[in-house]
View (tube, chains in turn cyan, brown):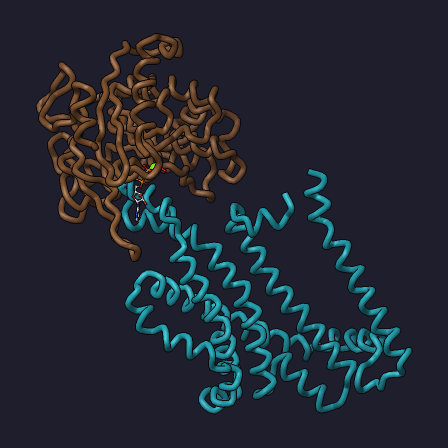
Amino acid sequence: MTRGRSMRLLPWITTPLLLIAFFVAWDVFVRAFEVNELVLPRPGAVFESLGEVVRNPATWDHARVTVLETTSGFLAALVFGVVAGVVLGKVPWIERSLRPMIVASQVVPKVALIPLFVIWFGFGITSKVIMAAMLAFFPIMLNVQLGVRSVEAGQREVMRSLNAGRWQTFVHLELRSTMPYVLAGMEVGIVFAIIGTIVGEYLGGSEGLGYLVVVTLNALDAPQLFAVIILLSVIGLAMYFVVNTLKRVLIPWHESVYGQNGV
Amino acid sequence: MAKDAKTMTAPVAGRPTEPTEPTAPSAPKLQLVGITKEFHTKRGTTRALSDINLTINDKEFVSLIGRSGCGKTTLLRTLAGLVNPTAGEVLIEGRSLWQGSHVDPTVVDQLGVVFQEANLFPWYSVVDNIALPLRLRGVKRKERLERACELAELVGLKGFEKSYPRELSGGMRQRVAIARALSITPKLLLMDEPFGALDALTRERMNIELQRIAAATEATVVFVTHDITEAVFLGDRIVHLTPRPGRIRQVRSVEFTRPRGIDVQTEPEFGAIVRDLRHALDEEE
Ligand SMILES: Nc1ncnc2c1ncn2[C@@H]1O[C@H](COP(=O)(O)OP(=O)(O)OP(=O)(O)O)[C@@H](O)[C@H]1O
Ligand SMILES: [Mg+2]
């Protein structure tokens, strides 16, 4: 019990320590080698700049756009990914006939399509939402497909021997058994969605934190560049945390959850 | 080989038309007529069951023994409607279990199946697992949970009602599976090595409990085991299956009065039956 608890508390102690160590090392490195401020600013300067960035209301307008794009793209990917995953997992002939297409579309570097999306959908948020959705779609779909297939034969037989109907089998067995796969896909998917949004903002548009990165880069303001990147990381972390919490709530029985706590 | 064995052994042969008990109802509870099952895999065809004929009467307790891989599970799964036989027919109270490629649902409704693996649902607690069959039949929550708690106590899991399967030992999981099968008070109970994962003492207690339940619920039981003593202790008849291909080698009646206590095991006749069966099993290569 105490062991389980200390295992749970451990990251809360080690993470701040590691972060402090990281910033100290960074500071020492910059001072020792007298690195050019434009190449790598001191952490102090970055934090100062971060303070300014956070206090600037315009930053939060950008952040809101980025979060909106990411969540819309992610939710679209979730809906389409789950539907496509279920269909491909359940209907072998569809999966068979689409497999070459799916593999091909996975291999295509989707980020390279952004200029096309900008041409088709403009510089607004639509092109970024589509980019985020495209990137998040595949991990979700593939996981769901795997999950649908991985329902244990023995458990299926239990349902059959109980005369369970299709709907009952879905509710009591398939849905719950596939849930861990959906959530694993979502964990990867949210990260991919963020990447899609940011890259989309880099390449075209006039709002969002990705756009802000480009602007600060053009102004050669290295401390602010780092500050925006930190802000982006924090937002990304928060979104991942939401999905992770969802997982703890929805599948507390799964080993990926109860194993995590060292219990 | 199987032919010699038949002439050599027991008077009770597994002919479909021969009633073995004096209480012969219009149609026997369960009839297997010429059941053959072949599995086709990439590596060739396995004949798991070959021309199985067996009649089981109402309220009868039949133990099924045989070496590993001789087709016991396949036979049980055929009875449960989970395996469609290559040839032959399963009749339950004279009605065919299989109608084309579908199973008669009214027959399945009387079934309680305990599989060789527990096959619990890890997302449900012990009581929710036990109550699942009732839930599927639309029994009210309060009622089904009450029943599940009773059954949990019956199989010796009092205090673990709210636990999850991952928190239980293998034997405890198997007992949950037994309770789940019993929840609907099945008229036909099919059990595949249900006590394999239990220690000797718990096993003995479960044997006595099972005997009591079978009598109280007037269930017909088909019970697979590799433990000869257990088979003789529980069974009205013992069906001995030989491997490759799975055939009935002999059927033995056990006539001890019920309820049988543990002491029946020390009776000379009990020992003699166990010894006979053991020799017969040992003769197989
Ligand atoms: N789904 C399947 N596909 C192919 N072969 C199978 C299948 N199920 C069973 N068999 C074969 O049928 C034979 C009988 O298997 P079965 O599981 O009925 O044995 P068993 O008597 O229950 O053995 P055990 O005591 O080890 O549980 C085996 O040779 C096995 O390889
Ligand atoms: Mg078996």
